[in-house]
Length: 245
Image 1 (tube, rainbow, N blue to C red):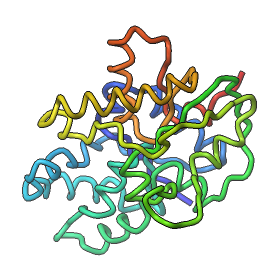
Image 2: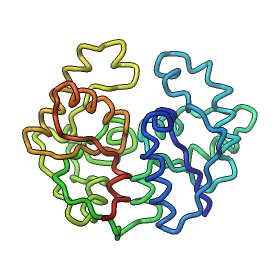
Image 3: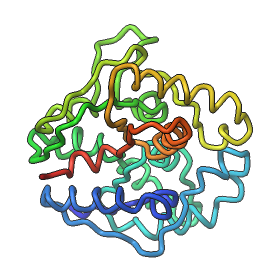
């Protein structure tokens, strides 16, 4: 299969190691990975701010970049969900529909498409898992405590394959971190307080690292940790799954 690698703009600009880890992990699993060099922002910030009518050119470029791929994979739940639900290309409807049906966040691609059952990864630390809202409630990467359903977590399933990793228990494991994209700008005080509560849960359970499938949530919590002079670090799940000693 030909797998297109979609790297969100904030990862490209601020956390390139996450992009590299994602690429290396997919290649280690024997996949033919294609990276379109002309890719840009997917348009999610515009859509979240009420300007989805201005994303037509972005959608057209995205379709052109990935229309030849069997699957599109991204290390971001929120950007993946945006493409799944909001990609529109009236000049090439067929290709846009194909992409919407075949774009996957990295964790769900590993668990649902290629069904990984063994990873040669080692990460000997105490890790807290943050279940991001877009991934959990939009992509269904994990069950939700507000619903009566069988408990499951695709990120936990993958992390259980990592040698030496100790996944800590949290008091409120599916609580929002407060980032919410443009929400952290329009409701800064609320966003910060929610982030402080989320970070405190990890600190109270002695986490050395906080991981998630969304670097945007981790970026928000990283800022709070730095302001608290904490030694706890954030790390994208792709970096853990690709980690070797």
